[in-house]
Image (tube, rainbow, N blue to C red; front, side, top):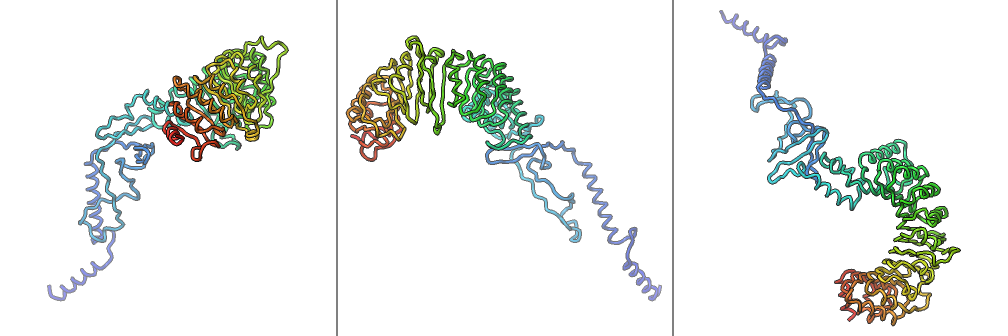
Length: 562
């Protein structure tokens, strides 16, 4: 071949190389395709060689500040529990140094998986996943903790904070906690306050339906051993709640409604049908159907031991019904009213009440002024209150109670332990000393109505009170009582002489004319005294007119008075 032919063949080869190549032609693109096919074949072989992995568990592990780990049923991570979720398209596995620079495009970096020192053990049971970390010294308390121990722990919280909503929340933690929170022992005392909405706001139909469903479920599944039930600030669904509770709670002993409205006669009818063990009814500061309650007391009053209600024009019919004898076994009676109430006069016939309730142990009339009625028959025929242990006639306003009225109430009460006469300015020391009780433990006789403080003349005779009960008194309150300095010193000397008993623990002398000489014997001899109120005592030096708590604080006062 000559030189011309060789040159022509060379030019033709160059043209073929420079011409565009088709899909079936050889060239650089065909080389790329071959590399791709080779890589896919290797990937398929690698996939076949891989060992099949177990199915992924549907859980997510989070680390919080106030707990060890939290597990949810939705899966957010793939593979290991600590592997971040992969995003975007599938990443190509490319060996380093084998691809050219034009082939490495849109490459994403993969974060390294954190290494765990010890793998957690996951126990999955139906809808609840329980996480137990496996570490050195771990005893698997979350899985093997005895249910009785957990119930005792829950009981401590229930005593302090109540069963609702604590038990409802801890019952959603795991199966073990749910079983412990479902124990009927923890649901014997339940108080339900505002439900889903703030007080005073209207309930939507959907919210009202939720409330009814929740009450119905709790009554059927948790209240089998319910003893004490309380509703606070409920303006709707009160009837429905009491009907359900009375139907499914045969052991109900106490019912309390505080600041509730909408209680009709139907509720009392249901209580009479189902709650045959009910003994205590507390309706203070609540609106209710008075005639319905009266009908209930007429039919089932023999089982009632405690009644508490608020003074009012309609509610006073209850006291009249009680004095007629509808509750012969009544042991606790309390009638109160609000501090800002204008009408606080309560007509009551003490002789009729003594005959109707001879087993009464606690009688309280708080912030009301009792107006005593007399029976036509002689008062000597009444037995009094032979079992009475507490009498409270405290008020912040003016009181009509005098020595004769007090004697008519307590002439047969030899077991009296607590006597609260705060605000009763007409009671005298001689009237107290004539009472038949000889083991009085608490006497509250302070005057807290500011309009009458300082208007009365100085009193005498306090020493008769302290002399009679010096061996038994544990609490004495004579705040703002205007006894003379000499009488106070003599009265304190009787308290100091009771060194053998040493029972005095609380002494309130606020606003009195106590002097340092009268105070020293009581502080020096009373080793059990841990509360002393000396505020507003004008006859004491500056710096000591305050409240003292504890033995150490009171001993320091003794050093200052020496």
